[in-house]
Image (tube, rainbow, N blue to C red; front, side, top):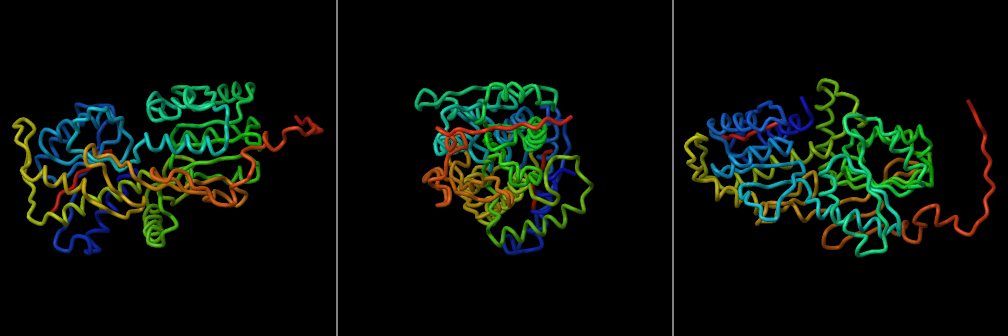
Length: 400
């Protein structure tokens, strides 16, 4: 069972046990396994769930199957809840849709603000797949507006071996690098960079994954490498920490997961977003006591009579979740307003060094101000003697 499914069940069970949010309602759920790339199967499973009478559908995570489910939800007036990034076109017609994943145009601005704070003049962007270019559009447009030289590289497809690419970057003295990839890929890149001597104080890496905080960085703490990223999980909140601790106890009882580079028992961002998603939908349920679900048939195109009102209540919901304050753009259902922690690798581990939000931008702590942006700046106009020693899934919510 994956982390998101565990988080989904954990959230439903928490709400049903707690009774604070929904004192007179019991949530039930249906889980369907699908091939992420099979939109036909995704459509069929969604129709099966809708025939049960559901209040909302969560997932699936892949864009092709998610789009198929979205079309059905639009037609039948059932809220579709996403917790993964999905490219939204400007003339978006998905009125029955919200996404808890931070809007990437805002995230892209956050990355650009970091680049400007560090006074980088040359940047290499390394992306995993073509969606990375969409997600980083604010940064990619930056050279025309700022004095910035950008080099764009793609990670090799169908292999986890990034060493040939890293070798090219090392040869080209590309010291400032932004990696847009999953936390699994980030963990692999760090190991390979260490093996290639690219984890030194000369290098500064920014990772776009919001799971950098959960990676095992023990081997790199004393390397001198500069490593920066963002975190949306509000770990400094005591209530959030308590929930994550309970989650960790349950998560560790689950079957062992494949080597992902994550620390054991940590809650990933995807899991936290799923937990928050269930609570946001429950807020809508709480505010609409007269709502009832009914069996919907995909071949009849008769929408759910409570769907439009329920979707509006979800979009209007305000919730303080594991991932901070949650509000949605009422037009497109995107999460455009959110708070991020800026984290950086120190000898003690990953530490918070600042915050970012769309309204205020970047706010770095006092200890960061006046600090050299990178070692190449601090070593300018100095002579050095160098010696070398040679050695040889899709969910739905029901309630009753």
